[in-house]
Amino acid sequence: MNEGLPLSTVAVGRLADVWVYLSTTPLLGLTTTLLVYHAAFLLYRRSGFHSLANPVGLSVITLGTLLWATGTPYATYFEGAQFVHFLLGPATVALAVPLMEQLARIQRLWLPMLGALVVGTLAATVTAVAVGWALGASKVTLASLAPKSVTAPVAMGIAEKIGGLPSLTAVLVVCTGILGAASARPLFDALRIQDPTVRGFALGTAAHGIGTARAFQVNEEAGAFAGLAMGLSALFSAVALPLVAGWLLRWV
Image (tube, rainbow, N blue to C red; front, side, top):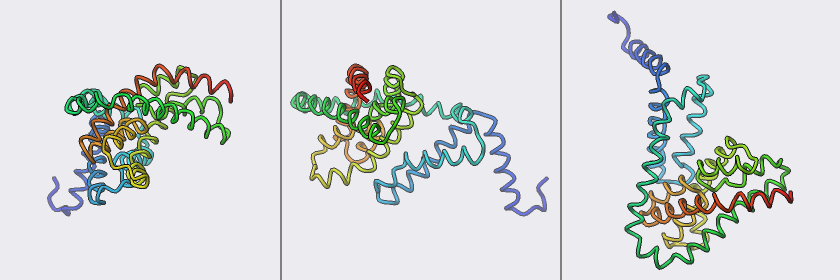
């Protein structure tokens, strides 16, 4: 059927057939997500793991542009992307493995880590609300900002409880994670913080899952403590942030 046609024309036709097929199945979101992230990670590696070439940030921008350019509804995209979303659960549970290897050090450092966790979590909430209030944000926006440094599922639940918009909080959480992962290394270097335990715990507290992934790319010890901080921060935030944020919002 394709005899006599240029090879490039045949190739384009086959690609078009593949796109049409994928666009009608959940494979579209899954395939696109994996290909975009793979390309973003290759770029990240070629840049020498430069913090500004964060693969998550590049993937979000690229996928958002693709959905907008093709007119693909997010619901259609997520039918396939939800398989990647599902894997977040097992990946989080798997963080227990490197944590067990650091158990002896965790037992020695539990008190300073507890103090850092409380201060870091509350500071993230207070500064977010304060900056938003200074810029004239509405109470709904402030409530959505308050849990921005907590892992997304917990943050969305907190936002809904204190009168925020869970969808806005989800966006803010991702932006916080990307910014934290991109700025952590130069900030730690500027502050002369070299201990991977301190780096990891701070990154997990401030930048949740995306920060934890970044910490694992740098150092397994830093990744283990980032995962610990992320989990403890979510637990502490679920209890304390509704009270703290509710008190702050009454004064703004």
